[in-house]
Length: 339
Image (cartoon, rainbow, N blue to C red):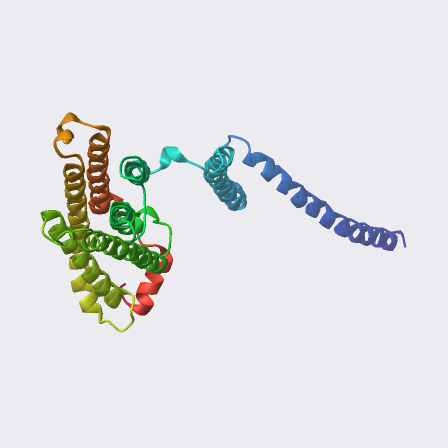
């Protein structure tokens, strides 16, 4: 009897100790994981488990490092841009320090050209007003003649020169708008030139006795310049404004149009200088050599003619001042062909 009790107690003890041992073993295994993590930070040699832990840790840290590097790079790139924008805003958006030196030179010379042209117009008006009686109609042929130097100066010199410079003076304007402006200024110059020619013929034909026409070198060169100007206008209008001209014809005509446009302008300057000298000699006679006020003013006007013409030719032919095509010009060129 006592032996059977001893067997039952041993069986109960075994059954009781068996489930208890399992949690003990499990708790030991669970506790071993934080120990392994702690050993990763230690300088001791790494085991296989530790190597796996380091690999997992590196995989977790790599995206964070890449994100931090990208953020740093973007910050470094954005900060100078923001600083530059702030500096431009503080200066009113006018960053002259980075402007092209050629463009700065062009602007200075362009303003100087305009001042020279306006000055010569004012001086011509002063010259005919103070020394030659002002302006008049056909009833007074001498006063009617005075329209000739005034209108020739305004139309055939000042407007002619500015029509040449319109493509470079207004470089931010669309090409098609510049073409229409170029043609419009030329038309205004042509109208003033025709009126100036009429007044000079009237002053000769209505004089008593009449004065012969077209006998001087001034008249020969002047009329030649007007004829070249008229032919230039017709050719340019037909080729570059009227649609339908073939592209290869436009390309072939453009160099000739540019050359004869400048040639006619230079010829107009030379003819105007001759006309001033002719008028001073006819009106002053031997007194011209004594440098009277009328003669000195005529010489100054002639010098301004030459300076204005030289500036226009230089600004129109200097390669660094050439206008660059705008994006809308390129789009129009691609859709309709070269202009």
